[in-house]
Image (cartoon, rainbow, N blue to C red):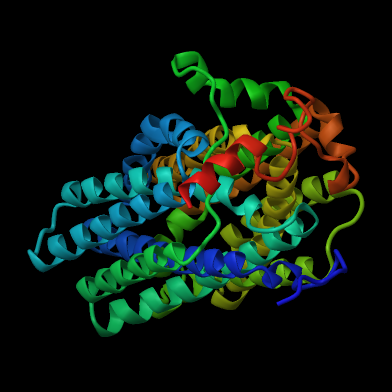
Length: 438
């Protein structure tokens, strides 16, 4: 297929075969995750009826994320990224099979399930930096925002279909069959990633050591645009996480059971998918910083609306709007960060973002579960939305450059490397390595 000449062609990224195979690998990977996590949270809450137990799932995932995030980024910047991604899929298959085995054995203590969640955390930690650093090599620079939009759209499709299918599988076949389906999804991701021809070995050749391991933090700290975007997302979602508490809302507040839980879990992704498709066809051109801050304001406001609702339809509408706002912010943030990062730093920057993401999601779930156990689920959700709105105001004052960011084309890496190594494409020395590998 001949690549489209128009940069703004709505399907420009699909002209590249390797991106299509990569996208299928990511779709099946995310599909497995978005079936497994809702099934696990439902099973743990059914066993314990304790909101804190839901939060501890996040802690079980977050601890290995913290321990392995920096090594995973260094791995993505030094080794062949396709091989790293494939190895991580094998670990994800093992984590799904561990839940399957525990369920068949009739284990009722959540303690053992937390070990499977920890294995999942390690696998996810090594998977994401490799995939993130690999994707920019699969399309030309001018098609990369379109690739991000379609990648995000595909991710949101799995966010919609995964939880809904998880609810149906739990109702019709039980937990064990659900986890077996998850393992099959990760196996498919492994196979599709094997079909990607483009190799991408990290170009980093700096000496190893602790200083090198932490360079992702120092790189982000020097770039105020990246620092502002990543930390805004970190704190906004940390305080405003509602996903972990959805089993409680389904069980005790809305009284809608497994089917209603699946609808609630899929609602944010429905809004996110519609927004991602819109961004793919009508990309943002100006005032991306303002759009970012406005999206977080809407995100916080809809959390408060959801917490106050006692009607299933209104709750679903609130979560759809929440997902649309989250997708807008995520699209802007991912594109700005990727275009502002050198290729030989993408793995380590991605690993730092993963630490932030783990703190945002998993620790946010722990925070939500703890607050819900102390002051009640509804007050905890409402307070989280209010804190999110407070974060927006503070970050608008702390990071004026982010607020004034206009176009994606203005985002470029700092002039830290020689020009030939700072390009968006594969560095010349990396290409020689890849050619030698065949």
